[in-house]
Image 1: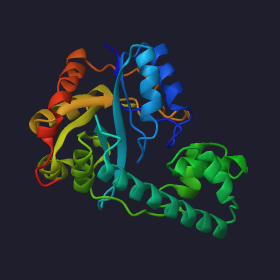
Image 2: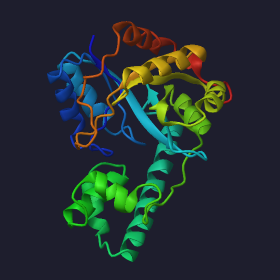
Image 3: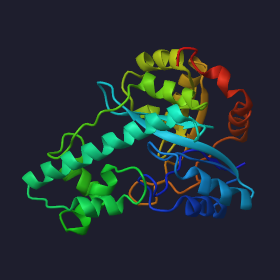
Image 4: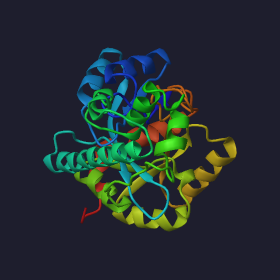
Length: 281
C-alpha cells in the first residue's frame, strides 16, 4: 500500500496545484495520501475531489511551524476539520505572521543590494501562504542567485543577512490547535531536532500521537533510530516525502518505503481521533 503523508501544493510553497499533486501521486502508484500545506487548508477540498475520482484514500492535513530556542519544529496535523472556526482563526494568524515576516525580509534584502518587488513575491505565492521559497524564487528571477539552495544560503537562510524570525506558535500550542481542529498531531522531520528527548514528553502531554520516522533522505540508520524513539514514547511512526516539486533535495512522491502495517495503524486512528487531544487543548 504505497502512501505519502507529507505533500505540499502551491496554496503554500509547493509548485503544483492541489489537483496536480493528487494526479502526480496517482501516477506514482500512491493509494493513500495527505496534503499538508503550511498554515492553510485551502487545498483540501479541490485535492479531495480529484482523489475521490482516482480512488485514492485522502487524508486532510496541515503543517504548522513553531518556535523554540532550537532549529524550527514543525507539527503535522491529520484528519483536521477545515470548517472549524477556531482552527481557521489560528491558521489565519499564522499566515498573517508570514506576510509581516516576508515584508521585513524584503527590506533587509534592499539593504544588501537585492531589490525585489513585493507584488512579484505575492504573485509567486499564488495561494494563501507566503514563504521563504517564494522570496527565493524572486531572488533567482532577478539573477541574484542561481538556485534555491544558493538563495537561502546567501540571503534568507538562518544566519543569513536577510533572515527574519516570525511570530510562531510554541510546539505545544501547535499540537493544541490541531486538536481543536479535531486532528491528529504528528511531529515532522524529528531527526533534525536537537534534544528531542526533552521535547517529546511535553508534546505527548499536549496531545501528540505520532512522529515521522520515514522521511526525505533519511538513511536506514536514522529511520531505525526514529523508530526506536517512537516506540520509547509510544508514538505512531509515520512518514512522507515532504514533496514540493521545486527540485533541490525533493524526494519524489511515493518513493519512501512506508510499511503497510504503519499505514493501516495510522488510518485505524481516524474514527477515534478526538480521544487523543488534550482535555485542556
